[in-house]
Length: 244
Image (cartoon, rainbow, N blue to C red; front, side, top):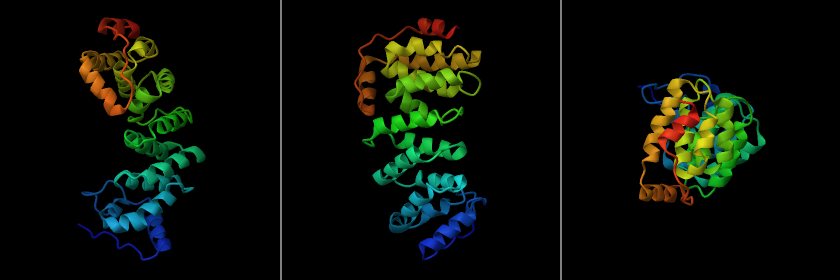
């Protein structure tokens, strides 16, 4: 195992080290997935006083790879309100594409529940999803499926084809739990899925439709939303809506 790089004593030196290592393999690939992951092994005091503030800065860098690396490490650090606030601001004021956008979506989706900014995060994720024709990061399906159903329907309608099976199944699952009156209309947007994709959706729905009322109420409490009083569709009706 190679020793982690020693952190330079100045912010300019640390910034230069990270830029230099942004496009290199991890020094310890058996421990790390990314070239900056060694930062997570610094002491808590160093992380909060030096590492996190610099990552906040670099998350808005003009170099998309530098932004991506900063987000990769921030996702491994303890959740902080100031990090969520910084990423929300960056999401609104910079153009996000490619892997950097995927990392940003993943981070915001992971930190959404319990943040106190759930509606705001869902709105930002919905806006990011309109930036190009790329399917959003997988965790976005849950956030939008719960908190921004109109945006979730729009994404599913645009991407109902190869590669969208898992995303579509997760959105359908959230609709069955929280928006049962909209499930059949949503499934009608998924008819372009492959046969295996439709079966994946139905398999997930079979579990969700079988949840008893008390379990649904507990889930609603976990997500901080109001339980729906609407009747659930049958699995047969769901299959028909999908065109199975």
